[in-house]
Image 1 (cartoon, rainbow, N blue to C red):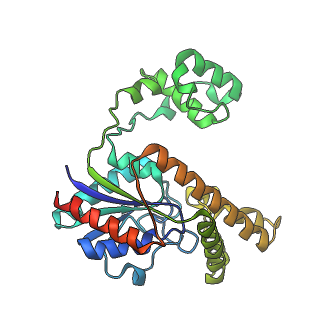
Image 2: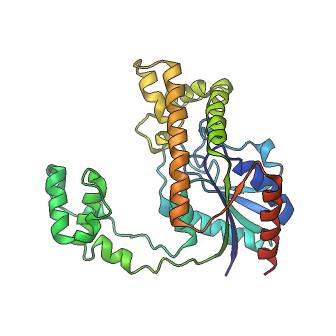
Length: 301
């Protein structure tokens, strides 16, 4: 199988800097696994790596979409697998770096996304309440109700429409083996939780100093709004109430810090439950060198 090195971990843990050092050491090229850095113009709030910080290491999947475009996990899967093939043809090591766990898992495993356009199915679901929709789903695809919350209206309707097209969501998922299609070595960047949270808090302050408010205003002036998918990420969505005049800058900072810390906690939980991650303390040089040696051996095997 093709080898792919994965660097994951919560925001603020030092993934970008570490990945650059590994790319230099092992002749790697980096694919961004971030769901916001794909958008042009969303730089400060997404902590997008700068050209200087790249240190001449090739990066893929950054600034490839207009900020009004939509981007899905299926889109990432297609792009990332194409990038992997390109990098391997260059006799380099593909490296996926980022914190969007579902994107990375979709790339590495044999997930097949459903191609039917479910919104073309004629029905009256849009007129029904959440409770009515959920009751219908319980009747036709009870297994899916175990994974979908009653208030997640969009997913409930999609599951119902899939069933109308011939197969239920749970049946389609059961056909997938969920096996790795790459020889992946996954490294998780971590550090003591209190230090990570402090780094996150300081990182948000730095974003403000770098001009995040001005970046948001420029995006809004260009025609984008907070309903666009690109503006749903942490660091951007928190500004909606501010620009509507309902909260001040201090509350924006507090919200971004809080949401970033909560997201970091969820990232730990998700990766621990979903993937086999080799976690290292980024403040421990011995652990960093140990994992680097293991990566070197994995490449040779």
